[in-house]
Image (cartoon, rainbow, N blue to C red; front, side, top):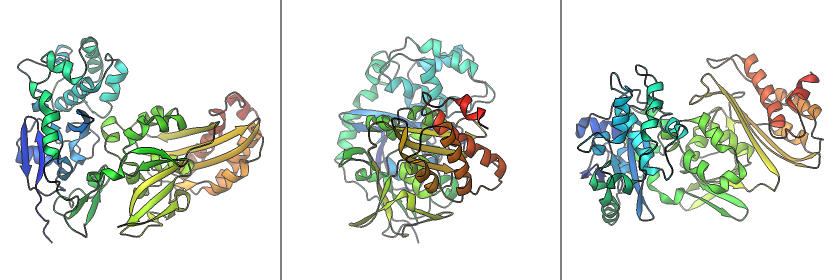
Length: 474
């Protein structure tokens, strides 16, 4: 069945675009094939290489906030009312500071990856309020591959940027960004008054698209010509609020927005360390918590954390909704307690009692930006020397994201000791059923599971359990 033509309106660099291209068309393809803006390169088409990075700007509280994303995973229909910036849209009469730094440090050779790197680094300057640091640049470039140049020269370029003005207004004043950026808040405000196209092309769409970080990798050849529903055009499914003892997290909340939430950071203080291992900044700006849950991967990084936090899932059909505990949601490999027409709209996380601590562990072939071999999360609370609450979850050791129900119950009321940690690790071995695959043998995964269980105790309570003590007993 053919798709229904809808008018999508957005700003592309300094031009207003009206297009009736199918909503599921990739932004990357629209730029290269329709607009002939070939500075945005086509590389892996999986969000892993960074060659196609663009900036997407949203009007928020009177200013435009820009986020770097991989255009190979973004549906065109999501751009309505937004500002899309490509490397061509950053050009000024002279080289801008990022371009000049890359040239002076010899940080480009074949040049294929360079446009995406320029976009990400310029986006970093646009959104920062503090001077540039090497850590900021490493985060900005975490989603980029550059095999022929190498990264030393890219990191050396930081020294050319540490005195650079930051923020959009300052960059425009210094003629480091085109003048049209000043006008974008007004332009987007005017665009917001235009009719909003429907978020769905059909009442019965073939695909629901949220962040697109998995579905475009798996089904990317089928989506552009299909009937799609663009979930990210539903603002009611975004954001985080604390109500009635819960954090109510919209299912479309991205990994990055989740990690930046002050409320979340109170519960998971070290969440930045976890995000560093999970995905690049460009992917974290796209991947959604709801998508991670519904994908039902046995090694879903955020799903494992949500299991340990005892989250509740709100599933809706039209005006009707119901709630199901995430610990009861997974019934088998890619099988869930969900009707085909139900949409996950909200995730409710109980606010933990004072003194609760959260730990998260992951092992993968690459240290960062890779699928887990095994991952695990734990939520524990100790009073005095007694464990009063505990919740353990593990991925990569079963056909589903696994809640270690028996192990969690076992430790409650036990003394916080190395012996308890070892007993919990032993019991966890009876709950898991890993298989050998390309990411590791079953025996290796069992070893990781044991080590992670011990780490949940030693890293969370170093004042009570020394690492040496855990291995002295065994």
